[in-house]
Image (cartoon, rainbow, N blue to C red):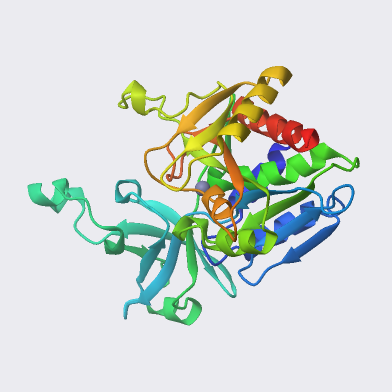
Length: 343
Ligand SMILES: [Zn+2]
């Protein structure tokens, strides 16, 4: 398992609209794996493997490159940075974070905290209140000089190293560098042999703010089959009732049937389940009450496509401690390669 690649993908900053660093890393990795590679006007990276014969079936894999993060929205006179979140943050996870401010000249290490008083002098009311994301600010330690280095629109990401813990992998950006990794490794897994279908692995932009890159990318590909590859919840942890756990880690890839954005094609779900059983690849069927993923964009582009999702159960999602199980990741890779070879 190419964990070094996953680590590099996770540690490269890339919030919505700022995916260039991640895209450059992927560009280096996919050399020689595809017949055609291009970047579209929204910044999504299209990697195409030609199929056999005339007018082959088009299968599109959608792997979003962006991670949740922030853009600097204001620099105060004293040099504190105010932020707008890009992606769904839970403010309870934002206290006392180390962050990276990415400027044109390079990165600044900084810290993020909510405006207000420390515990020693906080009132009982203060202690109970959870600030809104816009109440957090970043301190670069540079004071007023921050204004010379940072500008409105610069991205800010969490500063957390990738961790291996037994079978588990932990990072701030497994959502969705896991899919970037799967898109690259699935292409590698296909080897040199030509598939019947034409395969489009598309690394999309701006998913976390509403599947934006996937919409335009899908419209240009007009796939017959779309596969939304993403993380999903793994609430197999204390404090969540069994019926809400979504996935159990270590029980295989998630065959995604429904979320707030799409309902998967029934025949495809049956086909993938039968293939997984035949190949002895562990899987679990997954549903999510709300939230969406890129598969929905493929399903509804142009005249529409048949879609399903391949997902990896992730504990502590949208925090700096996102955690996946490497066996689930391997199962997701195995089913992708098996499915692409089967068509
Ligand atoms: Zn995602």
